[in-house]
Image (cartoon, rainbow, N blue to C red):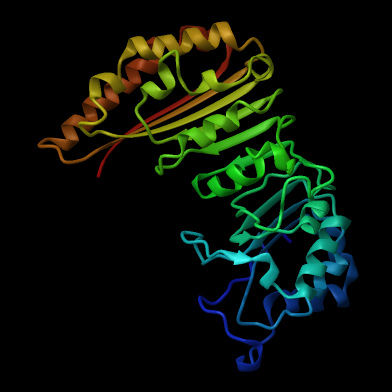
Length: 338
């Protein structure tokens, strides 16, 4: 049942104004499950993008039949997720809330992705507290949760954040007095810093996990953010430096005057990164680095892209001797003209 997607209209239509519509896709699936209950036993992944022009005030009846789901995606979004409408949890029908929370308690969810939801209640987090190793994505802040409202914090083992998750990170993770989300035991952390200037939020997040094993970072910045000694990796606590086994770095740079090419591609800086990894990460076994340089507003863009590509290839060839010898090293360098 992987990838069951329920799409929505752009605009909400009140129930009394709804036209007669063909069966909702998830209702059709529910009918199949009712006819053949064994289908419910093979469902492991469920993705629902709420279809707001349909009347689901009684909830999704199919959820009552599923108890083997490990991966759940639920929310309100457009077809491509380029824009995410914010829907308040308290505006969702009580029937849908009830069926969703009951489903959450009954299944051992290990990956949870939420889109476009905010004002989450304490009941929601109580249901989440039974999760296995959830990854929470794009969850807005809740004005209904006050410090101490949650009796037991939700402990995460896996966390995936992007630029749309800033509000969630600030209100549920970094507000330690509220005791809502505890990421101290996160072993897998993925962060996409985006372009919105919220580095301080995500660098604070990096200081919290005590025993990271897998770290994936995506940064649209100057390469020196990674390669100098006071780089993003320096935010990690000493305990995570000792336990990290796998690091994946993706770096995207637009070749502009603000990011001088001689700084972006300084081999000495990259050699310094290799030295840092050799001395500070005793458990590291795998390193992946992907570099993307975009060339634009140039008199000779294709020639410049070729030159940059040659420089990047040389960096990977000459600056990672320790990593080549001791790690499973995977590197990708791409220069493109835009």
